[in-house]
Length: 388
Ligand SMILES: *Cc1c(COP(=O)(O)O)cnc(C)c1O
Image (cartoon, rainbow, N blue to C red; front, side, top):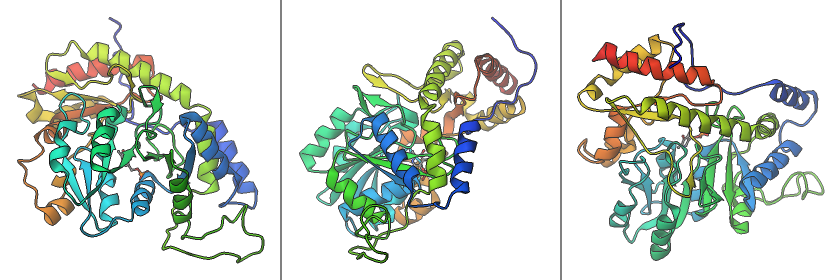
């Protein structure tokens, strides 16, 4: 086996910004239009074409897109939404913004995705929507989710923040449920610095939410306002727009998204092969028949008794120049805000809690080269040997 002795420095994530992005941003800055311009519109079209979405609406963030999805439903106090426990807090916060209640469901052990078998027991007559997150890019079994949603007449929100390039039986993530929400935060699959996108199969949802995104103004400034000030406001909308600078970056990133995804796929395969021989470590599934992950990162689960020394392993990896992270540090209901509000105990959500406590996420982004993969695998072995 090839060995690399020299210390490398591999960050967990790094935005892939090149000449194209720089040129695109400078071009916007050289002109008069920083918002409400052609780049946002084009970015929406390119994103829609890539995902084969009938409609795409660019937003200020994935969190804004999730909030918009619930605004469309008009949910409020007394309403409930099923939310996966193992996710970014944004998945639950978006429900809280509407004063509705997130009802948390634990994960399944092999993938970290929502435990579909446990969903129905959490549905009440107050449940209005069901949200799923494609955990680290591996799509949830949407056929089973949609069957439950149909049975109980629920709106389905897909948190696709890590799921650009994720496919469920040939359909891009975000298009099987009612709304799919994507993130362009710096270390996600593509970036606009801050930004997001909402895709949907429903024309009425797209129309209503692009209005809600901009104060609830009933006319689009570019194509529909004949004279300045010629508009009305029907609803309490937000300022959740993406700007032209971000959209220009996003367009440049979309030209390379296939290359980024191929690199992630290859890195995942190569690193998995090398980690498979480490006895102290368990890997989650990153593929299923008919299901394609976008491979956000590669989490390793430390088995007992090493699991108790996770922080030491992470520190050792850090010293060895291997950037790592934790997805996610606690089940959402164990975060102080949610614990104070809903009082869930440590004993609940054992699967998500185990992933939170025992896992270390390793980098497989497009900034990681083949030699880095060899290095990362070696350093994981050395770090474990050092800490044991
Ligand atoms: C990053 C992330 C978000 C939040 O995305 P923003 O664009 O920063 O709002 C939401 N959900 C998941 C699963 C994420 O990973």
